[in-house]
Structure formats: C-alpha cells, structure tokens
Length: 465
Image (cartoon, rainbow, N blue to C red; front, side, top):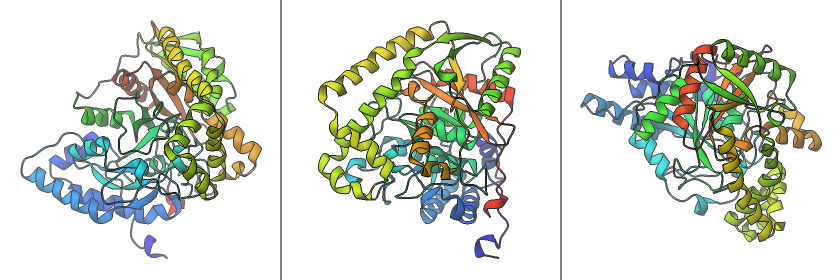
C-alpha cells in the first residue's frame, strides 16, 4: 500500500454546503485549520491521478486558516465565506506563486500582480488551497491540454473522459471534493462546460461584473469570472459573500416563463442528453413553469465570430514575436487556433466586434416577457479523452461542446449550468441564460430547480485512491 493510501480519506468538510459549514465553524464544531488539513489530505490522496492542481499551497493555506480561527475567536466575522478553503484557476495572479496560464511560455507580464478578484476572496475570509490546471491560455473547451496536463474527470476512474475546459482543474477539484469551491473563468463556456461534464454547478457572470485585472487576458471582449460549486445553494452563498448582498432565495416555479430556443440549441444532442433534458423540462412544467418555444437563429453566428475575435485578441496580448517564437512549445490545437489571429485584418475584426453589439440588442429583445432561456449546457456527454486523438473527431467535439454556451457570451448574458443525472451515470448540465447583470435572478431560478431535481450526487472516488 502506498503512503498516499495509508490513512483513511478524510470526509469533505463542506459536503453539506457552505452554509452548514459556516454554522459548524461558528459553533466551534470544526476549525478552519481542520477543514484546510482535511482538504490537503484529500488532495494528497486523490490529486496524483485526478491531476486537478497545478500548485498546492499547503503552508500558506494552513497559515491563513490559523489566522482565520484567531479572528473568529476574537469576535471578528468576515461573512458567509469566512474560513472556506478554495481553489483558483491558474490564470489568476496570487502573490508569491507562479502563474502559468497553462502554458510553457512566460506570460507573467500579461497576468501582472494579484488582482481585484483574488483580493475579494481574501477580504471575504477564503483560504486559498492552490491553483488549478487550465487549458493553455484558456483557449479550449474540452479540457485537453498538453503543456501542463489534462485533469481526469472524476466520474469514471477507468476511462479518462473530457473534464471540460478551460476551467478543467477547477471543475475536477470541486467535483472530487478537493476544495469548498473553485474559481474559473468563462469566455465561451469555460465555467459552464466543465460544470456540466463534471456534474457540478457553474455560474457564468456578465462581462464587467468582476474586474479581470490580475487574470490572463484571453479575450477582453468576452472574459468573465465565475465560481464552480457543489450546488446552486453554495453559488448563492458565494455571490452574496463576494458582492456583499443578501443571499438570494429560490424563485417560485409556478408562474415562471422560460423560453426554449428551438432548432440550434437542440441540434446534435446525444440521445441521453435529449432524454434527460426532456425529463427536466417536463418536471418544470409539472411544477407550474411555462416553457414556450422561441427562435434564436442568431446563435449560430458564434461559429463565425469566435474564430475571429478570440485568436486576434489572444495574439494581440501575447504579441506576434512571442507567439511565433513560442509556438513550438504550445499545445498543437491551441497553437493552430491562435494562429488564425495572425491573418485577420482590422476590418474583419471590427466587423465581428460591431456585430456582437447588434446581437446583444437582438437577444435582449427576444428575452422580453421571459424569465430566461433553458436548454442543455452541452449537447454531448463527457467523451473519452482518447477520442480527441483523431484530428477530425477532436475538432468535432471541440465545436460541439461549446455549441450552446458560446451564444451566452456572444449575447453578453448571465447564466448557470445545473447538473442533471443521466441514466448511464455520466453528468449532464441544464443551462439557464438570463439578461446581463441578472445573476441573482438566475441563481434564484437555479435554486428552485435544485429543490425540484435534488442536489447533485458526488462521484464515486474509490477508484482514484
């Protein structure tokens, strides 16, 4: 038996949620240091195979935890996130640690020093356990990336399946109970896709809600920050803790009016995804929600706009010289996608940028009279990583996995991905898209859906020990 298996795996200190943990912490039934040690032990036991973390900050995390316990003992309460151990995607600067953005290139100048959002986490009393792996430059939604490695989706210990990207490590860490919650970023679905494929909850925020200084810039046009959590209930606690607003309550399902965008969003669905989605929509209807068919053909424009804006803005950030000289070190797929930005002219780029403004208005008009739009988060189940070794198949999966998420970025919407379980045991996500800056409304509806569907199950981790 290896040293990593010579002790029992500690239980997840936040398995019952952030609110329950907070009550235990304040009642003296657990300490922040004990919770942090439990997570570090879980990381030690499970991360060698899961590969969720790029960097574990054990000594720093324990020092922070002890400081939090002293503050609580002295009567200082920092709010609902105080003492919660978290993981942060390796796009973010954290003082005293390297930031790789998933690449072998030196991009520290583009990330800069610790930014506003990490400071928000610290102010709220969160304990940073470490940095989670990301697809190189955050340019990829399958989760597969060669420079720093691909995390292992915890829903199948025998077959390496797509964890979803680019917040792959954050999703795997959350799903496997290696942290209380994790922070990711979403440019074209990189919070919602890994949330869906790893069976957890994801919140996609509106561009500008949280500043992205101190974060590697893939696309300033679309980049957003969002949490990956064990439940909608936890996401509501996090949103309240980081915005200093009251915790939202579940919306009444009876009377909700949700748009079902027929056509595009329901094309190319795996059989299991279609069946699980139909079952979820039927349950919502039975609970009193009205689901009406709408048409949003403009969603298909994502396939023309994203291949222009993302590569141009990434190459502009890196600079042509650094990109060309460093390309041999890059993931081949990421390098090929980014290289498209070298050949895009200013008129073409600006036309795509201006079109996004038109699309925001069109989407807002189509949202009138509705509380949100509902559809599958990803059309596909988490496929085996091996399936991406074929260039044609790999490209197909990459396009499919973001089919339903990129439009939310294109339309500058807020949204969520709620886990619903497939019959075969693999996760499926149900996406809710809402207007810009309607995060609290989206969370209130997601809370109601969670009460209806039940909180997501956790994967069986015995095969990862």
